[in-house]
Amino acid sequence: MFIDYAEIEVCAGKGGNGAVAFRREKYVPKGGPAGGNGGSGGSVVIKAYHNLSTLLDFRYKKIYTAEDGDPGGSSLKDGKNGKDILIKVPVGAIIKDAETKKVVADLGEDGKEIIVAKGGKGGKGNSNFATPTNQAPRFAEDGKPGEQRKLILELKLIADVGLVGFPNAGKSTLISKISAAKPKIADYPFTTLEPNLGIVRYKNFESFTVADIPGIIEGAHEGKGLGLKFLRHIERTKILLFLIDITSENYQAEYNVLLNELKSHSKKLAEKTKIVSLSKADLIEESEIKKIRRKKIKNADSPLFVFSAVSGYGLQELVDYLWKAINIKRD
Image (cartoon, rainbow, N blue to C red; front, side, top):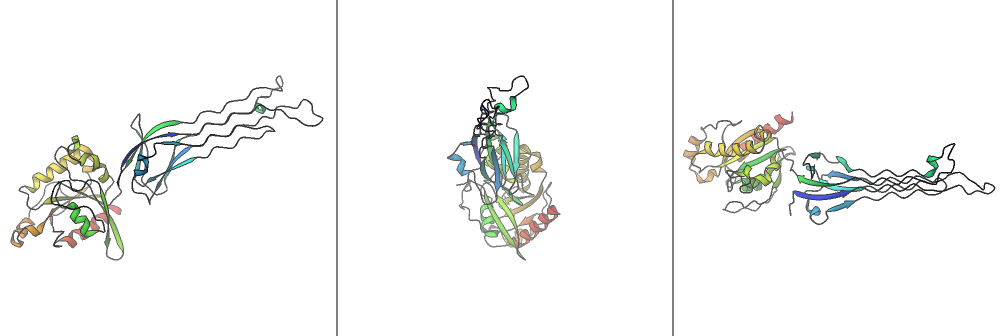
């Protein structure tokens, strides 16, 4: 199950208390202070791992607590530090503070990590408080509490190409033909209920990734349909591939609606390279396709591509163009 949102609570460990102790040695009846310091509490660390793909585990476990530090001992023995707790998340996870909604970290690289809650410092033992006027202090410092906070975890897929289109535009069929992804495909809207990520193998052992999200409808940025929930999954993509059903009455109007929804969600999203294509070419006569290919779409960054994922018509031409566009972005 693909889960891309979770709320958790993290609690760092408390520092151990400092000790009140005195030297007890033979022939030294009144030894000096010898209380050790408390150990520091463990911290909470979140780290990105490439072999994870969902936030599902956080549905079942909501609270993560690091170990407390041990108290100080006698004979100037310091307490043991508490162990950190490591929370593993997929690459692409965004960490937000639940109260302020501010981004704490963007874990967009494998192995990237952040301390989200620091352990409390251990208290000082009475040996630290001896002075010429108070050579036998009978007090020590308590350990400090560890940080506690509530966090929001959001997952954004990392892909080279993001597919954008209305429901039933053929996005799932396309990704199933050019990659090994196997999304659910049916002839009705909102067949895709969660994002799909496909790896496209390209010639000489090269590859690129494509993300398919549920179809966008007009008003998606206001919460209509399923688009708003999943638009963040194409925020990281380098290129946006718009799919419009070739049987549509007005290609430009459909493209304008899709583009407006992206702009309303994120200006940066609408500034990405935009490639426009017409899907389901197998539904149109060859003579009609030649006329359609001469059309131009305003505010697009590419020629108008026509293809059929079912018959394969124009598919390699589209994949070749995507590869070139991706490598321009990489350079």
